[in-house]
Image 1 (cartoon, rainbow, N blue to C red):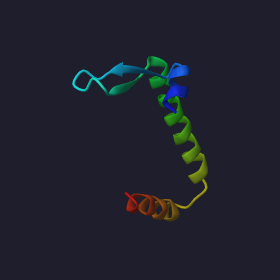
Image 2: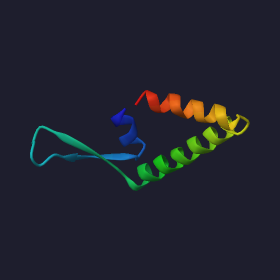
Image 3: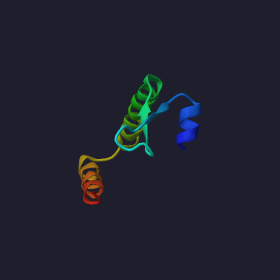
Length: 69
């Protein structure tokens, strides 16, 4: 997956100074922007999905989702 993200310009690989064998992955500006856009799209879809649910049902679903953490 890192190869694809790097090829698409969303991350760059850096040498890990403390561990010469290691490689770090850092998001590029395009990667950060894509992440922010994805978060916004997900929030909009969640709002659309829950818009017609009752307040009680929304609270119950939120409690269930928090229980798994």
